[in-house]
Amino acid sequence: MVDDGTFLGPLERANDHWVVGDRTRAGGRWVEFRPDGLFQREPDSDGRLIPWSRIVSGIRITWGKHSWNINDKGVYTLKGTVAGRNGGWLHMTLRHSYEDDQMGFDRHTRPYRAVDALRLEYLLRHLVAEGLLSATTLKRSASQWCCQWWSAG
Image 1: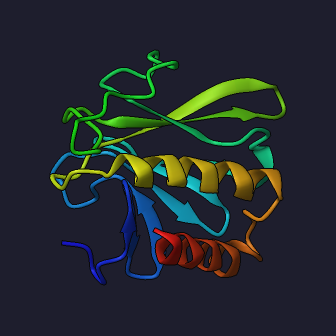
Image 2: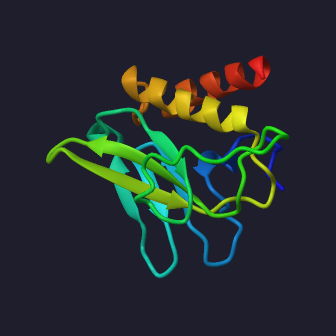
């Protein structure tokens, strides 16, 4: 269960920050939204940070066990949820040196509504394009945008 019941697909509020993926799964992978950037948590690692200033293009989401499924936008059920139980990937282009990168996350046991997953991807693309993901604006802008999306949903 999410601390305060707030989530948008794989994005959820965890204490004082936002997380993509199931952070409660033993040996799992997830991505934290920190003031200094995206932080990947994974087993047997100290983690890895990608500063907001390095992200050039919007963040896109793919579903599946492997990160090289870059065109796999997922399979959706007749109930309007993302099918499968494999994880997902946040893909982005980084500056200096311009390269594609990805951060993996494990899926929660709860189903993700397809509309929530698509809204999350749109939200991340917009926040990156508008330069709203930075140390000074992250908490305020992301929270405002997420609240607007939930009220629209």
